[in-house]
Image (tube, rainbow, N blue to C red; front, side, top):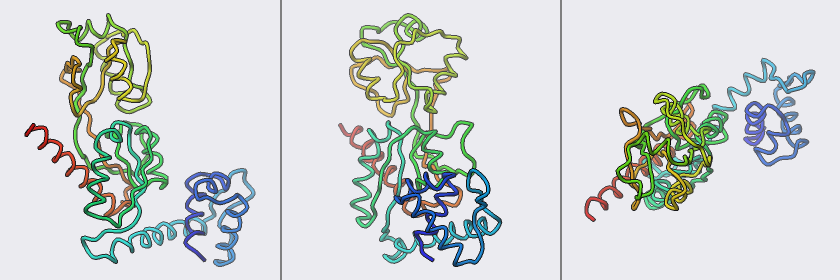
Length: 295
């Protein structure tokens, strides 16, 4: 019996097939089968019903899977406890939305490296909806996303990190125009509605019955701002800081806001490492705020 075998079992349950589980844990499909066989020999009973097209856990398999989750959680917490209360250690698999990657994440990584040098953070980019799935399946320990919008996977909890407000951004030569005219008379650069923030924008446009002339659909806030800077249209974005040189007007009545959260599973798989990273984000934002106030 090995931890790798337990990790493989969890991956099969999360991904629904031996092949996809192999991709997730870095094994061939035949190696995955050998890991399952070793567990079945150890416990003396089948863990999967192989008569079906997709592997289905037997009752014994569900019991072993539940215990595997518990064992892996305990194992991953050992490193953090060995160094004492304040000396965290271990690896945090973190997902993050693009706006966080270009904003708070780099500063938070610096804070973590200084305060907890034995912590390693592996960062993956994605949209909030897909990151939520990866957290729910255990492929990520935690993720920095926008506050979940239904539908979202069950079994998730989140802690608010900070709040962004939604702004209509336009080239400076549009000064003097009101929001409805800016949205209906100029090309509209849409924030991809597959993102939770994009869905929020789309709902508000429908609520206000504003028909926009869509020219582009993009999922990068930085790229959208660049397009607006070039005079190619207007856009609505959630922003932490006002972009210099652009016209920014509140969007929504009242102005819409979104919460950026640290998303985890209910069993808090990220544990103290995820909590420490959330604290690093708060510390880096406070430092940034103090610098702006003193400038």
